[in-house]
Image 1 (tube, rainbow, N blue to C red):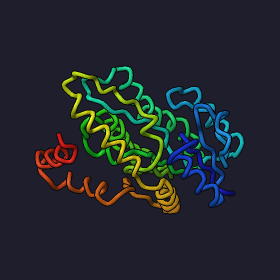
Image 2 (cartoon, rainbow, N blue to C red):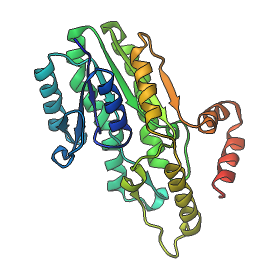
Image 3 (cartoon, rainbow, N blue to C red):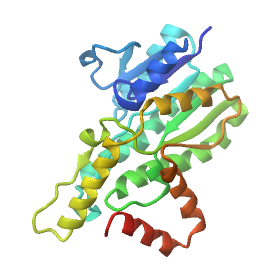
Length: 267
């Protein structure tokens, strides 16, 4: 039987590109969306799921298993961006970001592991971010939520390896998607101590996304990982300098790297 794939956040952007690519490769693909009834052009079925709501997660997973009898690959792709000076980001927005980017994927993993243990096989791919490897100015919460998911994957891999389950992270750089439009932007407040530096940095971040790579690059990378019987712990997909920035963080003294980032953002 063809392998069954579940992709959270499969109605747009990277998730949609991955789903379409795998669908055309012959996989049985299910995506999720908070409002699937609004999506009219999906080439694969969409299940209702809000990763902040555990009940919707378990219901969607149960439906996929009931229909297909198996669940081979789960791609934790649903996520949201957030920007702003940490001092000015409302605490409820910080919590919402972690509910979506961190606690949501954990709940999805908990929902699918029993089936994968039963099958004695399965692949879970967590979509994180190159931003999760470093603390970036005015993206502190986003970097923290994605970095946390990177680390929890390292731990979980060792806990489930004996069950025949593979878990890996894929950290994309900037891709041309609608994430900038959909993320929470703390407003640039006139007269704030952060007005000028945050305003300038926000403009630069949005330009990076608008000029980002084609999401199909992520789809190709995911397909390659799925084909690998022993995937690596971490993958990075994006422009060379974005990936190289992780290498520089490893080899440069902390303050030198910090100065490099501040120069880049003109802080």
